[in-house]
Length: 101
Image (cartoon, rainbow, N blue to C red; front, side, top):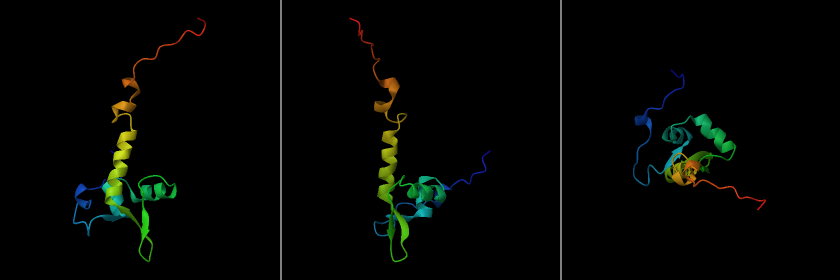
């Protein structure tokens, strides 16, 4: 069994009104994605992962819930296991041409 902490789905913020639930801090965004906040910080430092921005006078890192959903969909489209168009086994077999002919 893994020693990693598991995120409890009930702890993930649910959809709320447009005013109250469209922005998530690092902790809530990480829970929403099912990853650790440290991973999200590393991705941000490397300029990977979902788009984020700083908000307010203290410059807290925030994520837009819609941006997280869009990023998840991009990840799904870029993965050959979930996108049949990218699966190399879906491509027709290639034939060698005879360069000597």
